[in-house]
Length: 205
Image (cartoon, rainbow, N blue to C red):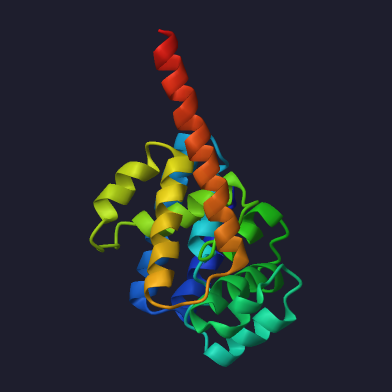
């Protein structure tokens, strides 16, 4: 069980470095991440920490975020070095390591991949990715659908989320990191395999 003092320390840091709206979003994502972790049998403490800290660097000046990106030893796509909106995930992972001394790579990579995803992302990382999309403060058009998908199957939910993300990037003429394409392919394949097996089971009955 994560020490309450440690969680309080994280929250105090977030309060001091984020707007009230972003801080509340972080709390909501943490709650959603814990709920999904419980549903899918993942570590709830790790989900709580990654959810809380996923946007820890979001409101730093762009130049400071980019410094973290350039200094990071984590895998960074060239596309991410040129897109301001993508800096914060890498910078957040760096802050988690440098400021808070977190050395659990499952937590670090869940923070790192929460925006662009990755073909080899862990189930915890997928949970945080989805928690960010379905948190209580989200109010985009399809959020209710995404909330239902998130609790009906991790692979299918990730596939639908990435399908939307890739489609939106294409429609808006944005570059797409290789890791996002790899994640899309992975969860598409996993979803297709699962659906094929379900059809075979029904046919065998």
